[in-house]
Image 1 (cartoon, rainbow, N blue to C red):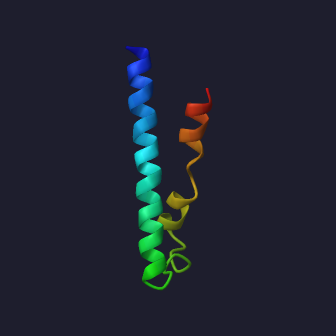
Image 2 (cartoon, one colour):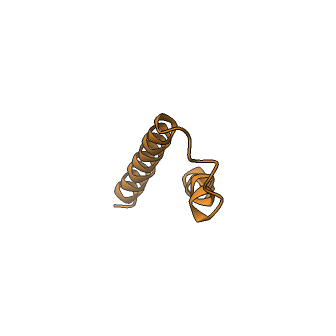
Length: 57
C-alpha cells in the first residue's frame, strides 16, 4: 500500500512538472509575460523544491 501511494505521488509530481512546462511554453508563445509577474505567480514557478525533497527521501 505504501508503494502504491508513493507511485501515485510521484505520478502527480511528474504531471505537475509537465503542466508547468506547458504553461511556460504557452507564455513564451505569447511574448513572455513571465518577467512582468513579480507577485505570487513568479514565486510559484520557482519552487519545485518541496516535492523534490519528498521524492529524494
